[in-house]
Length: 295
Image 1 (spheres, rainbow, N blue to C red):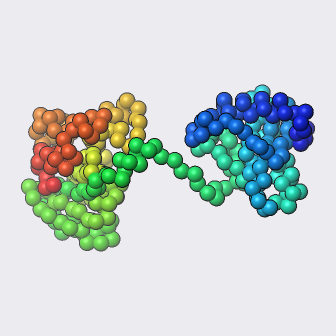
Image 2 (image 1 turned 90 degrees about the vertical axis):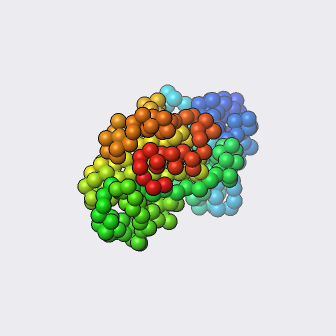
Image 3 (image 1 turned 120 degrees about the vertical axis):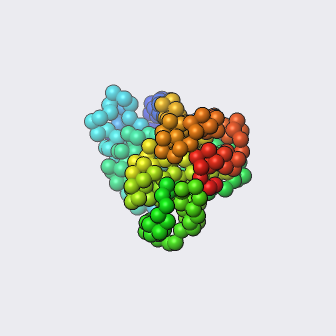
């Protein structure tokens, strides 16, 4: 049975507040554990709580929804949300809002099922990442197609880009670049994959990202056969196997491009930080030289 809490329920309310804080710690405000004051608190016997704050005449915030573990899976959370909706409607409100942590998958599934939808987004970023982002360098790259059929490359690249690409020919490779692929490494990879498929040959997407790391993707007949990123965890933590996989495969690169595998191993190194490697522009040019393409 759901009822509105009274002063006599203060100890129970406080206990469930503390249980919720332990189970779902707030990632942003961990030192601010003071709950309330609430404008209304609803209790489902001694197993669940819905605490409400009046934000305006038309909107209330469901500031706390918690069901003790033994009572989960039987609809108690849904009953509390609906009871909260009935309560705020009786106060003249039209909207019930709430906040939920992205990592709280079970709660998000419940709220999605009940019809809650995103209205605002609360975003957070590490300060160090923001400071480094403000000083990041350029992102650019090119696709290199192992062919002498320049006109076919031009036609096929224009289909993908929906614009005429810049082409250059050197050492048995056709170099393809455009402003759109310079700005978007994913689009650069897409172009390389499509050109490998349509030319039935080898293509290489090689570029610098954020002025800090060098990446290449090697394709053969449309299949991605090797990928290298100079700092494998530059964009976030990876499983050990994925970190290893982001290292250059010298054997494959040598077989498909004619590069000296010994030189590939010397140049295409990986590290935990960009500061442990040559500057990205320098590393980019070294890799291009080893592979035999125009940087």
